[in-house]
Length: 196
Image (tube, rainbow, N blue to C red; front, top):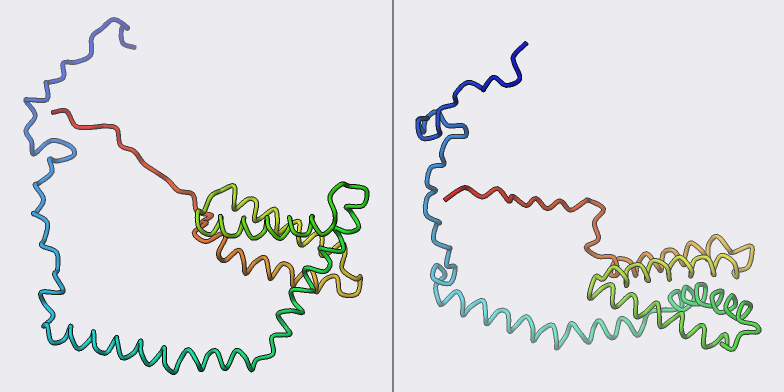
């Protein structure tokens, strides 16, 4: 056993250790950064002009023939599936709000408009800003909507109506929850600066 007051063996100062023996070894100076690639210098001006002319022709053709074809196609489609889907979700929510606003100073129509407004505003704010509060509001709105549809839909169609409500909320969540990751973000800050 060593004595508690006995000094440690002498450690030579850092100046006496050769650089080749240091751990980690000293860094070598890095090479100077490479020059950025200048694509406009490498592409002949005739090719740039040709691409510009082709781009303008593509835009004109799209506006002249493509857009009218799409509009004509959309006028000949049966959009009943969309209105039926909307009614499958919105009608039970309105029925639920009608049944549960009895005796309140708020009418069922006002509650329904508030429900629509909160959903639309939280979707847009969550999509544009990515704010946590807007995303939580969107999640709460979707959860409440599905529960209202489940409660107020006819018993025979309850599972299908709730599933369609979940699908509608999921489609909106593509936008509202974009960029949301379940991976933890780890930030490492190195505060050990070398002595100068």
